Length: 114
Image (cartoon, rainbow, N blue to C red; front, side, top):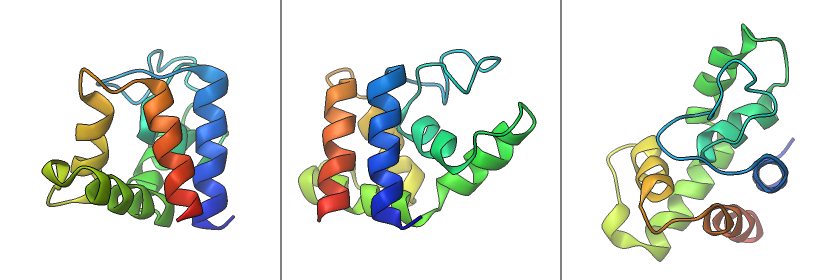
């Protein structure tokens, strides 16, 4: 899957399962269907394997091409959210009190379409 396809899959995933803040998944036991943060949706669309696959999927998602594209898009749109690492930018945007799930979905789609 290309980074663009991955971003669109993650956007669809969040639209289906919902958005949360401060955690990868609102319910880590049922991580495959729980609401998620931006990284949670990226991770879930990398792997839908068994529970033990959750940590591997999160690790892979943190520096994947889709995450880098999303971070670059967020930094272009919101320069005050520039972080030293990709995950800082995405997490900061996701966890802002004013950021909604629709905002994250839109950012993923915009990043995918350049």
